Amino acid sequence: MAVLLSGGAGYIGSHIAAELIEHGYDVVIADDFSNSSPDVIAAIEHISGRPVPCYAIDVKDNLALDKLFSEQHIDSVIHCAGFKAVGESVRLPLKYYRNNIDSAITILEAMQKHGCKRFVFSSSATVYGSENPVPYTESMPAGSCSNPYGRTKYFIEEMLKDAANADNTMSVVLLRYFNPIGAHESALIGERPNGIPNNLMPYITQTAAGIRETLNIFGNDYPTIDGTGVRDYIHVVDLAKGHVAALGYASRHTGTAIFNLGTGKGTSVLELVRAFERATGMAIPYKVTGRRPGDLAAYWADTSKAEAELNWHAEKTIEDMCRDSWRFQKALHG
Ligand code: UDP
Image (cartoon, rainbow, N blue to C red; front, top):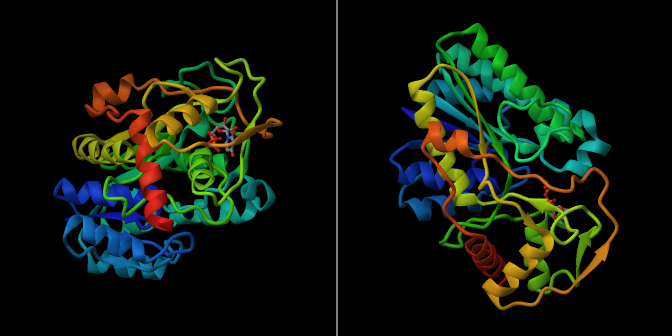
């Protein structure tokens, strides 16, 4: 039996693929390469030392997905495929609703048809919205997201809960990611942003590499340790290991379970910049600009539920994350 990994050529999906294979799972990747490259599949194969079946399909394509389920013995799905640019989702909300929601429905229908009962979903801490106190716990109300991207995550969570309610043999695990950074220790896979990065770490690594002149720090007047925004950065390899734990959980339980995947520690923008400089010896020129609309001052995860029920916790440090992000950046551009 195999795990279907949608979006397996993406930043997070590729690390999940490597980790699953290392833990003895058979993996089938489905990716349309709309925001990734087939090279990544070769890199995963290199890391794992074996071929990885890959379908270059859009998971909204129900015929292609049906063919995949007919050809492969899929007993679980990890669904990572989706559009993820927050700003673009504000400009083009229908593009996000059509793609992200339709993908999830199409996969669920194929699973139903082929008797596949385990679904692990790549959700996001953004579903906690702006109303909850930190640290976020899984029992807090969700849904007050500030953009269409976040709402697609929330709507899919709700849809999955309904699907699990309607079929008591189904197991759904919703994984709410905090801020994944870092890269595989091989430096063969990592984050490859398209154009100007939106997220902090790829902007830092590109600044260190001289591709960007100066890092813009979006506000230093937040009520935080040094005025800059605070997030819970987690090494992408730790995050990927959380999916291995979630698959194990899904094989032992039915119904819906929600887990935060974070470290439980907040780090400010300036602290991350300093940690990067320490870990790599590279200087990051920066200037403080205005706040970015929609940003929250500070949030991080309460990770006690994942620790207790998944028997998982993040192990890598901020320095590990900085070093590995930089190693991948150097490997990309020499
Ligand atoms: N940030 C920044 N400059 C950038 C990108 C991000 O100062 O070029 C800040 C942002 O305001 C936030 C933190 O870095 O406080 C993390 O932002 P990111 O976009 O990486 O993640 P998210 O907003 O999803 O938490």
